[in-house]
Length: 496
Image (cartoon, rainbow, N blue to C red; front, side, top):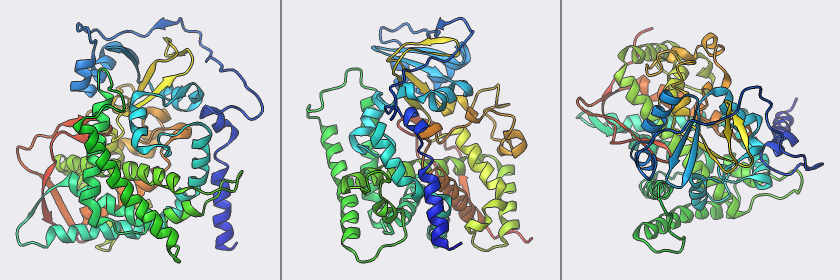
């Protein structure tokens, strides 16, 4: 069969993924009926979710602002799989059991929308991108974008990933003295370059500091807004909001300039931006406007740069603390590659590297919490979930559920051996979310993570500086509380 026919058939298959069932799950009106929401059948007695005790008039808000991971884990350990938290005027319900996570994200997602404070804050700068949009608009955008993230398409970006990672190692090792690096900052620059080259066929490395600073300001502002006791009116002028507007202008200027240059160009690189610009909605024949392209590119900057960089940073941290795991990873790399640069074709034989990456995201999922708002009353885990409740699904918590993860705080990549994975329900592990709203770029991210870890670990070793404490700082994403400062030393592939 001609290659174009194969590609066309793959695109048709992916467009078919957005079915009428997904319309229903996304909260869109059914095309043929206005069928009412159906409550899940349950024979369990219904009770209110147990409330986590708090002596303050603000409830658990102060503790949630100080350390949300500790609060959620404490509630889970003390009260079980469904826990109610009172945060001043807001009520949150943590849902930790994998089957209940599946219920919210997949089986009955039509009863849960994204109208939560967290998503409203994100929507202020991501606008109508895939992460924050809902309903018919989301379905249209997903249908257009889906073929661009097909595995056969993204495989073509593997060389750009390994080249960028290799040039980063060259820079680290070019000096006479051993390099000491802020590994998360270095991974941010690396993933921004990869996103720029893969998505835009554009070298944005010269914009790395400016774009990175603008993203940092935006995320900090978003995080602060989520934790405000009484949100200020949108028109209220503050220094923080002025900085946010300036950061947004920076990001918009960079993105719109790239889009304008592409539209004016006679060339059409085979990258994700071109795929998005060429794509047409199968119902209307319309493509994406510049504003829609901007929203999707901004979303990819956050999801494709920030979260992937954090996953890499936490992976280097964990490898530095577990010498036996690192040695086994390096042995696999040396055996498979024999000193040559990795390619996409090597991925099936780099199974241990993949397991290391997955285990890193189990312990430190960059998207550490997912929020949903209940549209109508529901029952989860035998507990009544009133309409309007904010339901929290936390990969950080569920990934530590002792019923499904033995010794959950241990770093054990072999948890992800095929035989052991089969013992767990699917939503015991969901670093990319799940259901119809699962991250569209999860295959791209996994390929990038494995290739980057392989390329860097093949040529050098990263060791945490002695006495460097590393804690978590959960905001929109799960960052380290302080820079992860590491010593870089060269290594030669072992003889095989």
